[in-house]
Image (cartoon, rainbow, N blue to C red):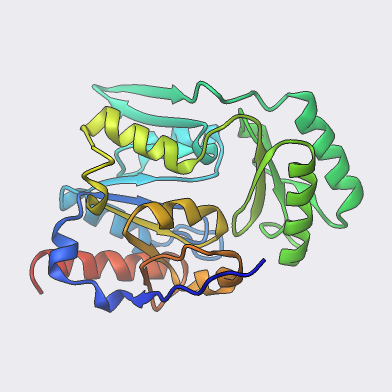
Amino acid sequence: MTITKQPMQPIAALDHVCASSVKYVLMDIDDTITTEGKLGAEAYQALWSCTKANLIAVPITGRPAGWCDLIARQWPVAGVVGENGALAFWEEDGHARRLYHEHAVKNDHEILGKIQRRVLAEVPGARIAQDQFCRMFDLAIDFAEEEPKLPLSSAQAIVEICRSEGAIAKISSIHVNTWLGKYDKLGMAVRFLTEQYGYDDDKDRNQVMFFGDSPNDEPMFEHFPNSVGVASITAYSHLIAHKPAFVTNHAGGEGFAEAIALLLQRIRGN
């Protein structure tokens, strides 16, 4: 596959006009706000800084429903979209609220069972993600979260198996997520913002700043003009046709914190 090159500007190119339009800060979690699997102090403080600046922060992740319940309750965020768009969780009036996509298919489906058996038999070293027990709708196959980390070619082989069985499959920095049903991160993110905040996707896209790091974030990069890739996005450039508008100097949570600090400076006119 030939990927058309699209330049990414350094995050320092973000100007006051662009920054001052931002109302919503959306972000992937793994290797976007985490660093080597941990949510560091800088990145967590950056989330608090967004909230204190009245920005609406929403993680958009492939992580499971069980994690999303905790994130919605305990992180300084307005809600969370999980399992690559199968669900959205948030708190409202002191109660936990949950939205499930109407096309989401429970992960005990026989096709996903067949995919699991094939992947484990055909891709050496592949294993089911340790967080699978927390999942409701997808199957997560670990290729780079636990040791030994497998090459990207193994992830691509897993994707081919999933798609050959009629499932959707996306590569993150750590997992291949596969599911049945037509939904994705972008669709549920837009739906959540629209239903909760009156967001208008035809008019308000410049109000969104999205942060990501890997190929499964590409629809978000393409859709939102103010998208940002943390520095590790460059490892996947050959797999991404629609790259983010900006790229940070640092990877992971340090890159996220770097960009949020600059965003808030630009909003203030600095």
